[in-house]
Length: 261
Image 1: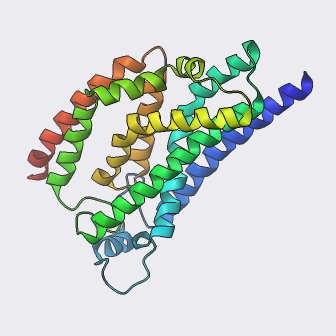
Image 2: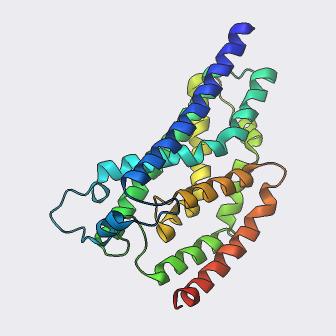
Image 3: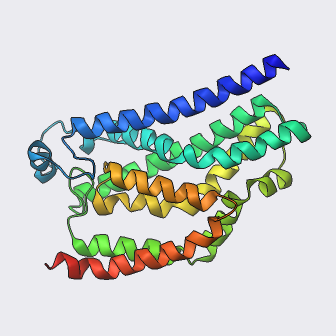
């Protein structure tokens, strides 16, 4: 029993250590790129943001490898905290069914693999937008209309059927476990992949909003993470989804007017 409790403590400690380390790394990246806490460039960052990505210069955020690494660490920092209710639900099955710590680790790994895959996709999107002149070197949309459009699209998505289905799985992971139960590490991995896919379907829009204020904005990362955690809480998850959609749509409509001043 003590060995089981010690393994549980070690796994949870490693989980939260990874989250803290990812946030620390994102902070160091932001400092290294001369950004303040809301993602605005300082003097050096402004010069970098203004550079034409087609210039023959070795700019890390204009290359797939460094940009993908940044997004992968960002996925860990932002999405692991939202997984806590899911991992707690799996722990109930360790106590009451035939779940295991290996299965717990499998769920975590499968979930992260899916989000790393999403990191690769959004890296490609950012590079396409960068070389297409839509965003600058820091991932900030150059046009207020692009930012307003993103806010409205993500806001409308909060009312969609896809959001409802995907959020339903993320909001009640126990039902997913009961309907797709597999034992052992391999079973946990398969369930983690499925949960990760639903989670991407639920939360992709909040990642896309990074292009509104800059993908390296620690303020955006913090607010998006907080909201996604709230969406997954059993008590209030369903109560915050549509109000957030309304707020995003209103922000998108107001942004061009505010930008004019």
